[in-house]
Length: 386
Image 1: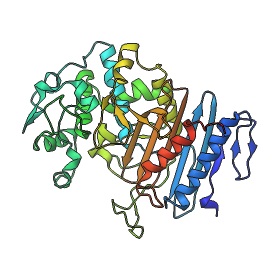
Image 2: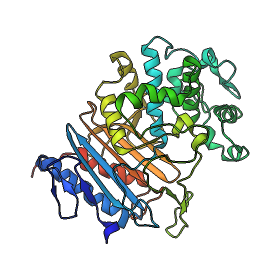
Image 3: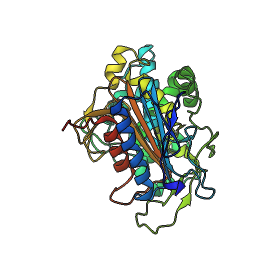
Image 4: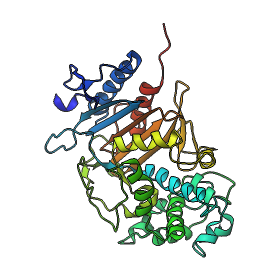
């Protein structure tokens, strides 16, 4: 059936249709074409076996581009997903925020060793929380020990709106996970605080800083941070579907496309496209956004715990060692109804971005991360010659 077939489009002139009705670049090397065929099969399996509504992936390898989809953007109309689709990127937002912080550090407007107390006096305090002992670097690499406010859903539900100040107050009411700098724990509060530091340093809204420093210079026309609780995805987009964390195959599916993401803000509220994310990570990994010192800071990693398997974390970026032994760099993001991965080679020469417009997975995959890991393996792992 149409919705179970992966379609491809190289996005380049002079391509020839393939048997599935899309196109593959005729100049792609054999190894690349082989990898694309494996990706095409995985996209189809994510829908037919994994039960996802739709999936898309874009591969950029030098000046070559490949784009593929399977399933649908809208289960009501059967419309296909497209390369113009915008989607919520969740924690990939953290990479943009960390990049802005590092740009400010390069300009001498702050130091990664500055404490949170210096920039946000009195904000980090409470049960075992002390902003005078937490550095900006600790926020960015999740070694602050600050409680993750999204782990207190009861407190979040007590508020009708979720400005950053409310999110930090929720975190401050709960004990720290460990003394600052003595461990690692993923905490969305860290990036809400980083966003507040950016606004304090610059005197401008975080959304403006991301647009002016990253999206506009790189031509990322589909990438932005919504403002004022705007629940709409502006521009072309897929519907976003959720089972509200239920794992049984028969769980009801809800449409979560219209969604106020302000409770995630700097930690995960952004919207983007596959092409924009590949362009961003290609430039970031390739050293075209940050000076050498800040590049070194960003990609200096610490060990993680209870997170993605075989991963380490830098400043807003992670490295993941694939089962074949290859290591890729980037970030993943999961938000209600939308899961994404954007990873590339360390030099940025090759990047892969994938998104699913559902937040569950079946057929042997525990969640969409399993699908994404298999896609990265198809893109980056060379088959041994036999």
